[in-house]
Length: 358
Image (cartoon, rainbow, N blue to C red; front, side, top):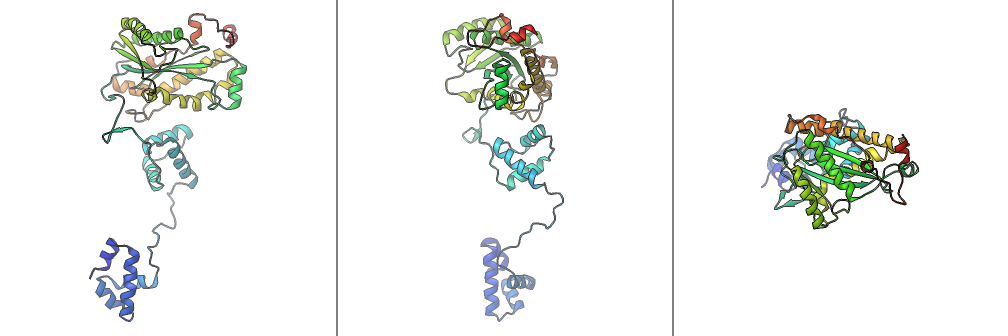
């Protein structure tokens, strides 16, 4: 006959206790004989006889080190919203709320509450990254994109109306290095191919001025402000960029995930910059200054949890990869791109007169 412990382990604790009661009943309530038959202690037999069939909770009555329910709820909610795992979520919570948790605490809470992890594209069961981050040099691969600042779904209504009222810039331009996540930013009132190409040239010139000599590849979507999906325009642009040891390529239509690095930055722009700071600006110059501060914060102070970053800032990651490159490369001057050509915005757009008078 199986012992009490074997039944408890292989079947269930409930069935083991029910068997104890049956054998105890057949033996006229003889505790010692029942314990001998099941090869267990008399204490176990009495506990099965006098208690319930289910295991009692082992939860302690007092947990002085337990995380407060409100904070545990915050961890669970942000874990579900972001899909981050414990290490990245710990840094995210500190950056967003200023609350410092231990990684082990966050890990335990996520596991205990069965918070699902973010799904990652895989191939043959292996994680598939877009780049070889370990061996890729800084500024060898960069992603370029524009963002419509007037996004009614992303901005608070008062901020949206404030931008319209004070005729602040309508578009944000970003080139982001995929290795260090360092960003180079510009703003404009218009989207045009002239501004797009000139912005690329400005960033490339800045990198060359700061000692970057290796080949630079810039990738963008099929927006009309770049090449609009026209191969001939892309060829013409590459002929020009080749003089700078640089190249450009457009991603295939419908493959937005190939722009994941720069696309992911847009949400952070909305939440941490555009939803807060434009309402404090009453002219374009003030807005550009705020944009410069946001770029500097991103490059020097804001920790990143992207692939290979491990909570480092872009400047820290740059110095880790190549400490011969000056950190001043991260201080790219954020400007109004329209002023490069002294363009006059077309009818129906917002003329930045407040910028030119300031």
